[in-house]
Length: 387
Image 1 (tube, rainbow, N blue to C red):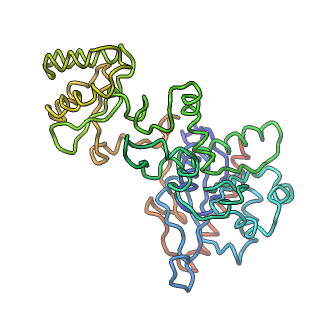
Image 2: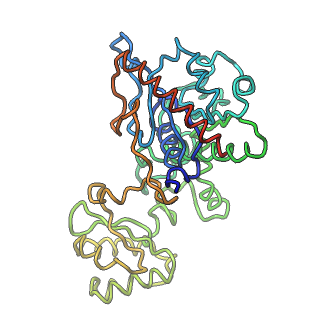
Image 3: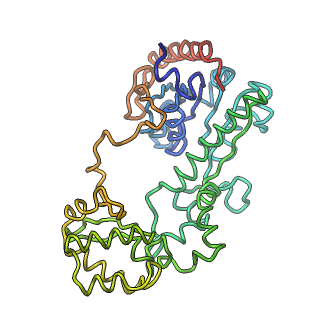
């Protein structure tokens, strides 16, 4: 009988992840959750006390194995790994990987060292953009350049951003994984590896294809932030504060039938006055947003958060309380349960945990590499890359 891990979609696929900041580690985490064997290469600490000498912190280590390697001094060991690998994940700024591998032509490198190798690399700004290609930046900068940041936020307020989720992870990590998976599928037919080149600016623009379609069809005015259907302009698609200060509920009753359900709940539970009900039902759901929104703010502030949660639960009113992260049970945080298996625990230099990098003595580094060599050989022998 095979384990869930052995029957996972990417079982038998060996991924080498060069340690970096969060977007590439998250891509490695997804590939690991899908069954790939992921080996992360950490930089060893140097004699310098500079923070630049320390390995990048990585809290996205689940299911991975890690080992330390000085990429500047021991290129041969990395090349040895890549000769057997299916995927290499590159988190560096333009030109760094080429310097590490000793080449100016990554396509040529693939052909020479491992014709089946897929190199997936992720940067923030487009490499071909002269004005920004080699600039430092973060999620907020990429979101700004993409044009999407200008759409986010409330009417009359400055643009708002949802932490670093959009460019780093949605436009970056997920697009990188998508590209790598497509390359693995293509390799089944061609037998050839390739270079998957992703940047977060265009990744988040691609993510916003639906909003561009809305704009083209006149359903979104990008010059009027916070005044459109899905950006808090509509009274029936917004977040409202309850009588518990700082606690909110989300209302997303866009369609007439769902808005009717919401209105029915207000009436059945006597949560709004007759005058308020009259105002909220005047015209269609696409009319009177500015007039209806203050009425709803008043209605929602009249009742407690728990009351609203109770009223909306199990209905089609599209009414859900805004939970705090601490209120979400640990068991509800997914480990890619959508494919029906639980990933193995993380392996860090053999054992490891989800706490990120840990210091290792020279003796332990050597022992770790001996273990890793055996680990890689076993996966190459047993897997022979299903994809």
